[in-house]
Amino acid sequence: MDVANFTPKQLNALRRVFRAMNPFMVFMLRIGLGWTMNIWPAVSGRIVVINHRGRKSGKEYLTPVNFAVVDGEVYCMAGFGSLSDWYKNMMANPGVLLWLPQGKRRARAEDVSDSPRRIFLIRQVIIGAGFAGPLFGVDQRKLNDGQLAAVTKDYRLLHFIMEE
Image 1 (cartoon, rainbow, N blue to C red):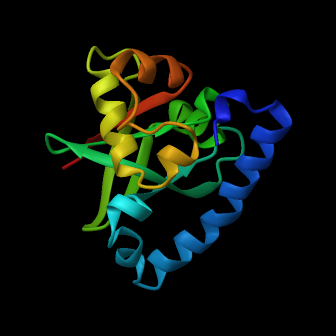
Image 2 (cartoon, rainbow, N blue to C red):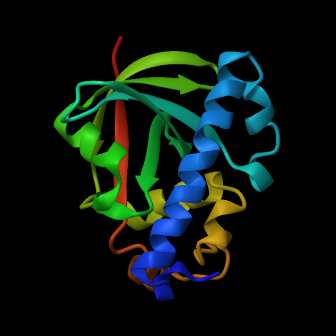
């Protein structure tokens, strides 16, 4: 599946599928079985739930996303780019609560899409995404840095600065 060739209608349908899966992932974390989603990262990916506040409503939202830890720092990306509501929410209200496999941590989200390490960090997040990367046509094992940069040009890369 290569989402780069999807029509806007197909992309919206795919976004709805992922949005429909989110409550199940949150439920698993709430009942203490979140570790099962991170048991085989190469296949299922590494999942973090981001507790963030709506930019318009002020309502709290829980959004599961794939992530990577690089040099002790947590990164994720918005594969639908700046169209993602959760991304827009965090840019308006960067204070979040991360539900990591090892526990909950307060953090501040920052967009680091312009980082000189962007391609390296995106590659790590895609590795952490398990099956989702190749599903979206972004197989980090088959793409060189130039190809990966082209395929992910609209993706937004987020870094979470942990609060003490």
